[in-house]
Image (cartoon, rainbow, N blue to C red; front, top):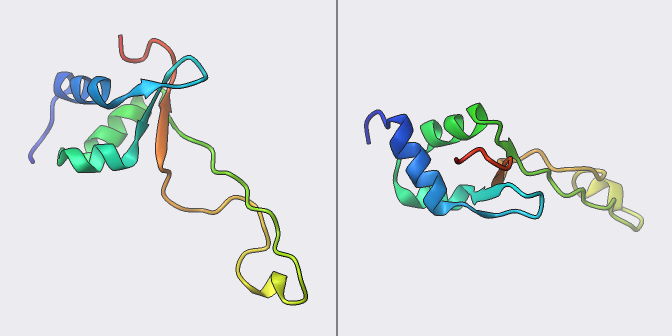
Length: 92
């Protein structure tokens, strides 16, 4: 898809977003990708409108004799965020 305009992105995000416990809206990255729209433009629009990637959940350190050798030693994984949270009023 070519260049997506601001109104089209706002309509897409409004349609895909769900209420978030913070009072804002949350949108799944998978939903953005499934739409087939220019996902990079949509994510850029979300971040330009004060949207932030949802905080990663910290994983507990592994236990046992070789636990520290089996991957990371705990903390949040650095990977692509699964959801983006928009503050209240960002879609109005």
